[in-house]
Length: 228
Image 1 (tube, rainbow, N blue to C red):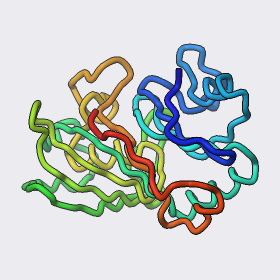
Image 2: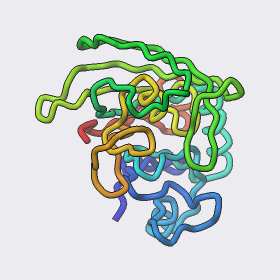
Image 3: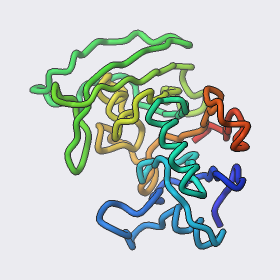
Image 4: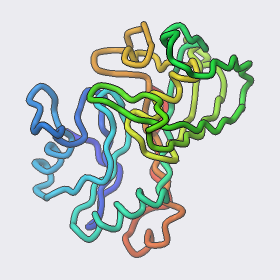
């Protein structure tokens, strides 16, 4: 049974667990993994139009449109960066050991203190497996805030917002600054966080910059518990 956070005649917002695809991958239906969009279509008996997606090992909020007009409008919101998505991440302490010596990333040691905020600019390209920095990549911007260490296990806690929506943007940006996400072996973690799961969760969708929200019945924001 899927978890719905919002549902009207135009849109629905659902919680995607880690290890579940948002929509079928480009190669077609992946029988090894459940697909949130297909599960919702079967449960609700409706056709869904995906607006954005989360990576397989990432949990969190996903918006779907329920008709072609709403889909077109929502795509424009994302293209114009009017929807703000906030993610909670747990990372390892800063280390550049996972970055090969030949990669020319600036290795700036950051003396973190609670409440620090960062704007991380880059150019991101990708191959079939992962994203990477490249002069030929597309410009990216990530806003990051460091609330502090987790009180129980001591991981570094981050709230991050991808202003641009490049593939694997948050995973790469945290990693290239030395903060590999716990469980994300693709970008430098050596710690297991569970099967097909990394310590990254999309916990807030903010629509407050959108003028059509009242007409389309969307709330200003939808948020879930950010704890991973």
